Amino acid sequence: MKNPDLPEPIAAYFNADRQDAQAVARCFTKDGRVLDEGKTHAGLAAIAAWKADSTSRYSYTATPRTLEKQGRAHIVTAIVAGSFPGSPVELRYAFTLEHDKVVMLEIAA
Image 1 (cartoon, one colour):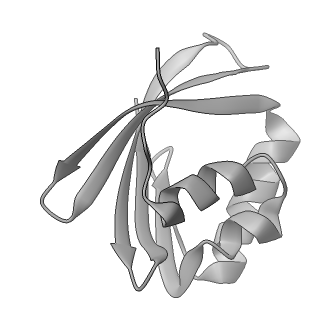
Image 2: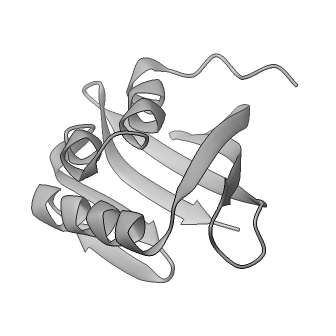
């Protein structure tokens, strides 16, 4: 399956996700938010801490497969595979962009 042509801020997020917590945080606006596993992480420090915690608990890769636009949101479906129960899984990443950065990311199954 061909990878989708992602908007630059979203492509930057998936590239940063393979790097480290600070690289991921730099993809967001200063008041950016992430909703993942029922918890909201607001602000760059909280986003970096969320990514660092995820990386310490799981080794994984996320491969974008589809992209669709719904209102202001860009919905990316990705295959996430790694060292966690049920791997691989298909997750839905809903990105809201602002000024070439991510202002909101919601990750759901």
